[in-house]
Amino acid sequence: MIRVFLVFVALLVLGALKLPIERDLTALHRQEHFRGVEFNLDLREKLGQLGFIAALSGFRAIVADGLFIQANVAWERTEWGRVLLLFQQITTLQPRVIMFWDMAAWHMAWNASVAAMNDKSQPRLALRVKAQREYFALGKDFLERGIKNNPDRYKLYEALARLYKEKYKDHERAAEFYGKAAAFPDAPSYEQRFSAYALSYCDGREQEAYERLRQLYDEGPQERLPTLITRLKFLEDKLGIPKDQRIPDKER
Amino acid sequence: MANDENYLTLQRVPGRGSLGEGGNDSTSAKLMETRHRAFSFARVHAITVNTLTELTRLKVFYVLLVFALLLIGSSIFMVQFTFQQEFQILKDVSLGAMSIFTSLLAIVATARLIPQDIEDRTVYTILSKPVPRLEYLLGKIAGVLLLLAISTLVMSAVFLLVLYTREQAVLQATIRHMSAGPRGQLEDAIRAVHASAFNIDLAPGVVIIYLKACLLAALTLFVSTFATTNIFTIVVMVFIYFIGHLQATAREYWLQAHSSGVLTRIFLALVALLFPDLQAFNLVDDIVAGTAISLGLFFKTSLLGIFYTTIYTLLAAVVFYGKEL
Image 1 (cartoon, rainbow over the protein chains, first blue to last red):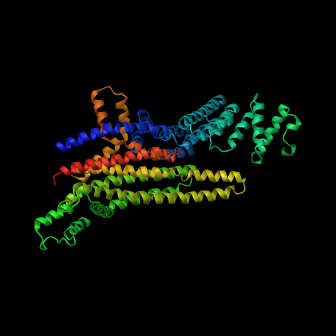
Image 2: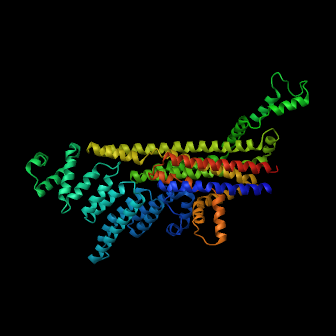
Image 3: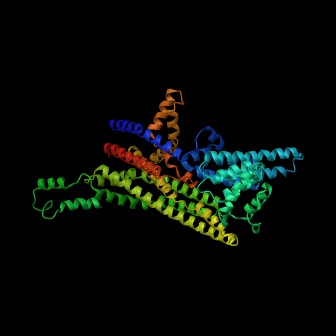
C-alpha cells in the first residue's frame, strides 16, 4: 500500500516537473503552426459527437477526409447548403490544408454562385444576383480565414486575387493580392506578371503598371509572353510613351 | 535462454572449477555471487528476443498488420480525385492507419505480457534465476518496442511504395497531357506533382507516431503491473488514451483559472499532472498539410516521448518490485 502511495506521489511530482516542459512544447507547436485546432464546444457542435471523439483521439485528418468525400458527393448533387456546412467542418478540423480552403472557396464563389444565377425556381433576377453575391462573399470569407490560418503560404493569396479579379472585377485588390503572393520566396514567377497585368486595368495606376511590366520585359525573353507584350503595348499607347522608348514593334 | 546460459557459464568458469567438482561449496557460492552482475544486457537481450518471438506468434499481430496494410494499400484506388486531393487523402489515411495500428498494437501486445507470464508461470521460472525484476521488465518492454519498430517499418515501406506508384502514374499522365505545351509549364506541373507527393518531413512524422506507440506501451506496462487481467489493462488504457488527448485542454483550463469550483480545479489538476499529453504527438496531420517540422521541434517532441517512456517503465519496475507473485 505504501508503495502504491509512493508511486502516486511520484506521478504527481513528475507531473509537476513535466508541466512546464509540456506547456513550452505546446507553445512551440503553436508557434510553428502545429496543433491549431481548439477542442471546444464550438467544434463539438460543428462535428457531432462521433466526429468530435474521432478528432479528439488524434484522427482529425481522417475525419476531415471522410467529410471531404461527403462534400464531393453533395457537390455532385448540387446541395450547396450541405457543401458549405461540410467545408466549414473540414476547414475547422484541418486549417493547415490549403487545398480545403481553396476548394471551399471555389465551390462557393464559382460553382454555387453560378448555380444561384441559373436557378430557375427564382424568377426575380434581383434575388438571383443577391444570392450570387452572397456566394461570392462566402468564397471570399473562406479565403480570408484560410490566409489567417496560413499566413506563411502564397497559394491562398493567389486564390483571393483570382476571386477579386474574376468575380468582383476589382483589379486593384487583385493586383495587391497577386503582389502579396509574389513576395513569397517559393512563389512561381507568374505571380509578378499577374500582379502587373491586374494593375494595368486600374484607372490612374497605368504608369506604375507600365514600369512594372517594362521591368519584367527587360528581365529577358522568358518574361516576354504574349499577354505581357499586349498589355505593355496598350499602356505605351495610353501613356504616350516616346517611340524610342517603346518595345520593338515586331513583338506586337 | 541466454539467462540460463549466463547462469551455466558462471558454473563453468575455466580453471576455477564448478559446483560439485571438489571445490568448497561456500567458496563456489561466493564466487558465483561475485561473478553475478547486478545488471546484464545479455539477460535483457535474451528476454527481449523471447518476448519478440512470443509476440510475433500472436494472431492478433498479423490481423492488425494485414488490416493496416490493406487500408494503406486501398488508398491507391482513389483515382477519381485530382492528384493533390488524392495524395492528401492517401497520406492522411496511411499515416492515420499507422497511428491507429501502432497505438492498438502497443496496448494489446503489452497488456498481455505480465498477466500471461503469471498465468503460464513463466515469470516464476525466470525470476527464480538470478534475474532482477527490472531486467525482466526491460526485456519485456524492449521486445514490444522492437515489434512496434518492425511494424512501423513495414507499414512505412508499404505506404512509400503506394505513394511512389501513384506519383509515377500521375507524372506519366501529366507528361502525356502536357508534352505539347511550353516546357516551362510542364516543369511547373512536374514540380507540383512532386511537391504534393513525398515530403521529407513525413519521416520525422513517422518517428513521432512510433514514439507515441512506445509511450503507450510503457504506460500499458505500468498499468499491467497492478492489473490482474489483460482485459482490465486494455479498458484502462482506452480511457487513458482519450484522457491523454484531452490533457492539454484540461491543463490550460486549470492553469488559466477558467473554472471556478474547487472540485473542478482539483479534477483538472489531477488530469494535467497524472496523464501524458498525447496531443503533443499528433503532428503528422499538420505535416501532411505541408507544415514543415523544425529540427528543434522534432527533438523536443522526441525527448518528451523518450522521457514519458522511461518514466513509465521505471514506475512499472517500482510497482513490480513490490508485487507478490
